[in-house]
Length: 151
Image (cartoon, rainbow, N blue to C red):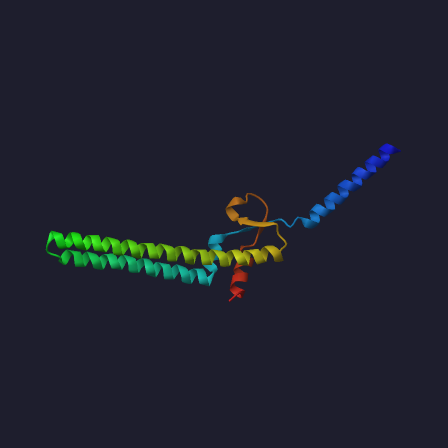
């Protein structure tokens, strides 16, 4: 009689644990971040803006090279090189800081949209699609739709 009660209790306990696990297990979603970036208009705008700023930096060097070639003495060339090097390093540093800031903005907006999808779909986590071998739910299109509707 005591064994029967213990077995019944064990089965009931296992059943309760099993049901609760299914209720709280939302699963794992995965996202193709590159696809989201490619389909997110703000990310495209930022990418074009960064490309333009990079081209400006390259054009700056081309212009300075032309000026350098027009100098006639080694002393003028040396002074010009030193001055240009400092100016270029400052411009390059400003560009890198700006680029990092803009890339972080894009990442944060995508992450916010992914967090909203995570909550709406009742998922436990969203990971990069390259880390999923089998299973999971692809939420890439849901995140893209969330970003498009957030305008």
